[in-house]
Length: 448
Image 1 (cartoon, rainbow, N blue to C red):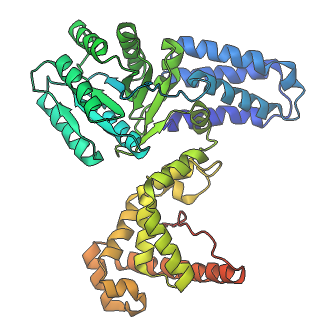
Image 2 (image 1 turned 90 degrees about the vertical axis):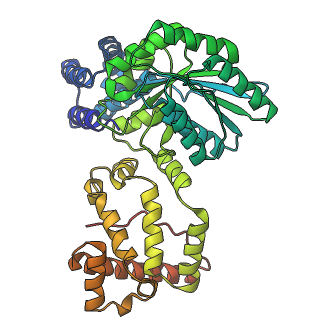
Image 3 (image 1 turned 180 degrees about the vertical axis):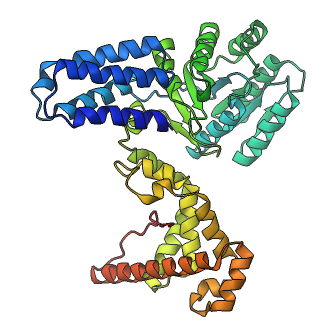
């Protein structure tokens, strides 16, 4: 997310950090470079102009000139203004005083609309809410089938309309069903088009009038850049959207849409899609997003990923066995590895740790290596995973053939395992001497 924009901004702001004294011409020269970077990232020119005007006014003020570290002050100003550009504060969701709360999700075909409906359902269910999905995209049979599949994966029911039928009647029936079943949330998946057209907007307007949604969320593809801003304007004029969910922020998006939508439409970004998994939907917190853009990390985001991905029962069992019984096998190693993988690509995780994105060698690691390690361990028998000492040359050769990896990788894995085993024993001694067991996590699996 924002990788290219982040690197270029960090380089430009680095020139400010290096100077002990900043003059007004220096600031203007640096801001010209930032202007070029923002425009190349497809940020709306009007938004860019206003942003830099505010930064310049604050950066040339007396507080910065007299600061002990004027460069860092300028960086802070840029951070604060980026957060303001994204919305000042985290946009909250509107809830009905009497259930069900209705979320109407709109967007063009191919934007990731139906997938976002599934992700939103997963997120709300995780919060303890009873969710019902309504399949109101009745023009394409595949859309109904896709929502049905997502509903099964998330574990929430789907109210389906008849393909080619009336989407307004389907939405009305879904709302009635949500009330009868005491569902706290109804999420309405609507039809999309390849582009905005009048029949689409009329249909969406009738659904809006029928179900009176508390939230109308536009799903916009971040990779379309300024086109996403234009689409947001069109939907807002027709429906008065309440917020935006930006998808495909984990791809090659240059970041311009994220920085432009609120400035142009006045509507907040409420969610950001960061991957293809059903858990990859983050709340769009402006402060945290600004921190990511300026490579300051996002510790809260890292903790949230861990909470979503880590199996607490497996973690507690692993801690009990290692710290209590002094055992650490390759089966335990595999559990730790799989828990880390669930949190996402290692290079993405490192970027969430302040100052670590560029420093750790894992930041540039090939994510396939974790899969290779997993394949090696899974090619072992249960006895071999529990008693690695029996792995002689012939067994290692068989494991290499079974996993499709060279024997050298098998040997390297075993060496890494022994190093971690030693560390576990040291941790256990420290815990025993201190009268308790330290908390044990495994985020540092090194893949060289």
